[in-house]
Image 1 (cartoon, rainbow, N blue to C red):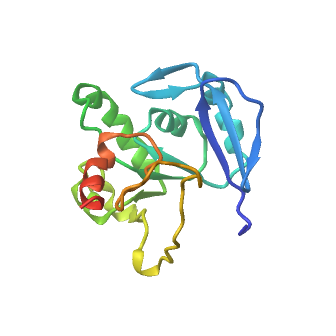
Image 2: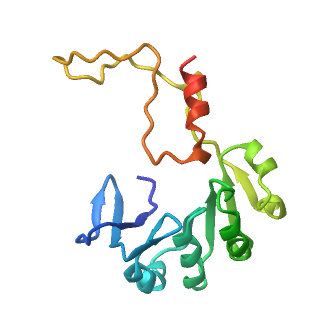
Length: 187
């Protein structure tokens, strides 16, 4: 809508005909070849990544993600930004090898985004990159939000929602703090 072309690239279980266009975005999914460290990887995507990247001015990676890390080394001469979601803390042996490449990945990034000021202050891997790290929060600012009364249940449903509840869409990862959100939201 604002004149920026965006393509979302990912890995899926089965090969799909692409690209798909949805809500103004081009979506390209590549068939998964295998998984490593909980990340699906695609040989086809990795082979084509440099050619794909030539269509764009900037690349946006999410981290930690083994696919993002590998992709950043395969794409030539393109600036990229990183949305950094979490430090790797649950696999210390694996992280001993990963952190060297992570440092190069973050060093080469044009900018790094984190989702809270607290995270920027407490993340060990980001300490060397504070000068190019920016905080962009995710969530809803209630003072600027119009809340509409709506019913998410079909009219003939017997299910009753509690007065306090929240809806989460995504992978339940320990670093996302869903237990904390639940405790705060449901008090």
